[in-house]
Length: 57
Image (cartoon, rainbow, N blue to C red):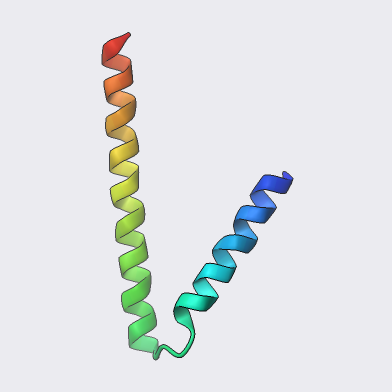
């Protein structure tokens, strides 16, 4: 695994631990759902940008 990937994993774990601190199970599930939705939205934005770049070529 590349160093950058390892650093990203550690950073993501640290952020998750900070966000989850003191939350109950239901709150953790809500947080997970929120993060998953943000991920889906970012994927949609990335795909849109790729589509724009392809059309410009």
